[in-house]
Image 1 (cartoon, rainbow, N blue to C red):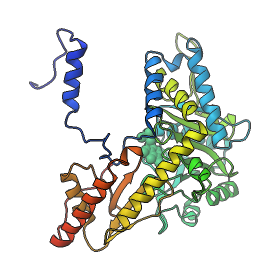
Image 2 (image 1 turned 90 degrees about the vertical axis):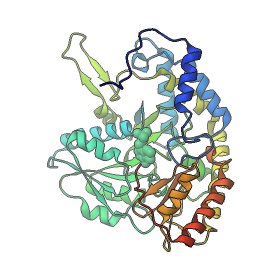
Image 3 (image 1 turned 120 degrees about the horizontal axis):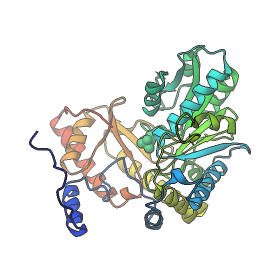
Image 4 (image 1 turned 180 degrees about the horizontal axis):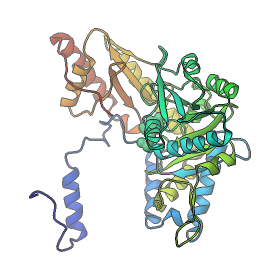
Length: 415
Ligand SMILES: Cc1ncc(COP(=O)(O)O)c(C=O)c1O
């Protein structure tokens, strides 16, 4: 191998490193300018700055040692969980913990559910999970590791889970039903109340994946937007995941997993003692965890508070409405689903929407694509407000051009 980076012989000082790193990132998509439709989130300048400062103050602490050394971090972590339980209307006796992201939170809920299914008996292994087609791949990732099949069922015409189809797909091996609030592809909340009834009736575990929208949906509800109920107020909801590092506007990596019953939380905890140090227990897949992320999440939640999240929710709702109005005003474009929060998915019948995406790409936009239905996709946060007029102008131009030339595209949808 000739082109492999050699381990550095001599160290470098910060100014040189900083310049080199800036050069490495110089060709990135202009994400701060709102040109990426996923990956990054912004609420407001204050939250970003508070998160950054808190993160830096605790950047070298390790949340793994919260119980034995970093008592401040442990206290912050406990308080974050309590704030989440309150927000998601969990009954007393409910429990949860912080994780490094939605995938880890989902993994832990699936593990807890699997251990419950084993303890409950009456279900045959291998277990399965029944989910709408729109559910996040993290369920398959967890299933892959734990040998649990995931049966995905087509969503309804409105992009939401089809509860009747999910009911028909459950069998004697089904341990978990999944609903999203909202799902990532179409931005709509699944009929959680219906799924809750089904879960209760069949004694199946209902998991609500509120990773993307959990920390925003309650505030959209508070400002009068018709976001369907999705949390522990629905009796059948047994666990719920919600990411702080998405619409909680906290720095990455930070997510939460909650359980209606503390005993279910215990099932997510890994315990071991057959090694020289004796008892070892973690509620996460990760061992060492960034202290900065815990401190930053605590600080951002406290900095914004309910009134701050409501204010950001108002800004986001107004911006999403403006995007939707602009998009649907372009002849030939239509929404694939009516967004419950800020995720939009739209397409076209008369021309190739991926050809439109290709033109947008040429103009420096990273297009988000869905394959079924074939469409453009964007998860809007406040990074996207300054870019709105330019995006809509470029979109209109791209549509006009594709209609004129009848162009098609070889672009493939991918995450
Ligand atoms: C609905 C949903 N669930 C789970 C995840 C996984 O989250 P993470 O990327 O933090 O692991 C995402 C990520 O976008 C998501 O949108």
